[in-house]
Length: 320
Image (cartoon, rainbow, N blue to C red; front, top):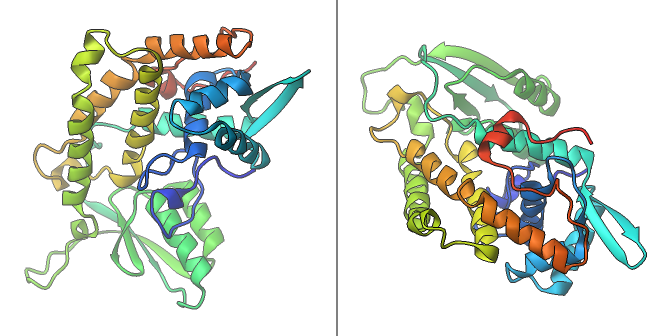
């Protein structure tokens, strides 16, 4: 089973799997679009979606019929989708492992908090010593640290203001046994211009600009959503694109304690905009997906529905 997305699509040169991260640096990949569409409308009950409907939905993102069919086949080979055939008609649904992974990713997006808990001033530091010639091991270690919100203060010294997560510790032990150490400690300011603060490990200006760009782009759509003027394919497209963009932020933003952040940090406003677009378009997007399924000759499954951010936070997948 290969995870639905690849973290290298967010961080070119890195290569760690994650269902949460479709490609963003060069537009939406067709596989990323397909998985987001399946997750947004079929994840709750792992509903079957006619292949013709999925091809049609991808076509609304300018993916050719041939390209859409190739995308579906590749996702099936990767273990992300599984197929079923009835005569000449085929349908696909998410596999159980993919659904679990995507549900976990959706939960992380939904629970991406506005403010961090109170902070006691302790930093978690991961220091490692892996020779440059052992490149795959170094790369994998750095990828996992970045995925968990760590950043490099120095090449082999990575930091987080959060306690070490047991899952991360298990991953690190497997990647670099005997080659790393983990500490929890407080920063001592040297009172020198040459001293480097832990906060310097993050480019907060760049992260803030990512947020501001997101807010500027999607805020323009809010009046049209409020007046019901976004419907049909446009509603599906907007929901898909905002999800594929917003879910970068749990990785890009390390959720630093409030006292370490600049004033007016834009995370809260970005979340407000995301909720207004994603949840605000749930009903018209769902209606359009139902119409596409009907046009494809498929039976309308009542479990093909648009879930909300609240649904994602509660855990989308249910037994069927």
